[in-house]
Amino acid sequence: MPWIEGANPNEETFDPEEWGTALGSFVRACREVPGMDGPVTTHGRGGPLTALDDWVREWTGRADPTQVSRDAVLAVWADALDAPAYVGEPRWFHGDLHEGNLLVRDGRLAAVIDWGCAGRGDPAIELNAMWGYVPPSAAQVYRDAVGLDEAAYRRARGYALAPAISGWTYYRDTAPETSQGALETVQRLNASLDD
Image (cartoon, rainbow, N blue to C red; front, side):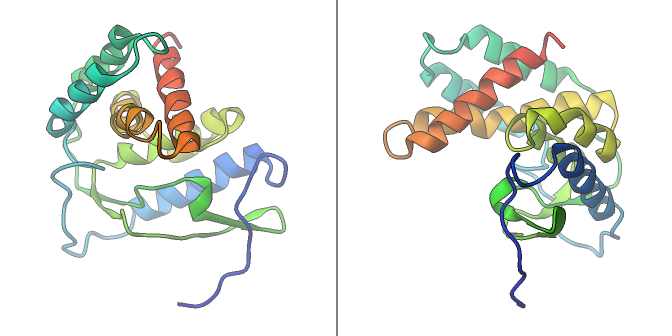
């Protein structure tokens, strides 16, 4: 692999609107790549949300109810499960779009790296970055650039919730910064039901 010059983005070095637009355009381009008989995800990122139901309920039960309402978490989850399922052709996704996997150079997105979570499945998985890694100021721009419907937006909240609710508790003692980021994602997801 060639070395790609660049730095990880942050809101001080990369314009949030550019972040949302460029990353959304990248996601759309991935979605249009032919399937080429690549494996289809059946569990986890981009797979059916119903396969994650036991996981989400287990980790919600372990969550600290003094920091987040378990009822609110389960309301987000129920809404994601109630959203119309994706029935189209499985689409390619990166599956791990966070600032550590993005490189910017001269104020523009230069590369998306670390394809270890890539696969084919529900394209809604890429919208989950709205509550975790895309700056809040760029979230709507990103959503518009990705160009998926309301049902995908609702499913995406479920894809974002599953790793966040577990990561918050699992990493509390061993990786506090990761745990805090996951908690903030859960809080944003809870607030998003009122949007």
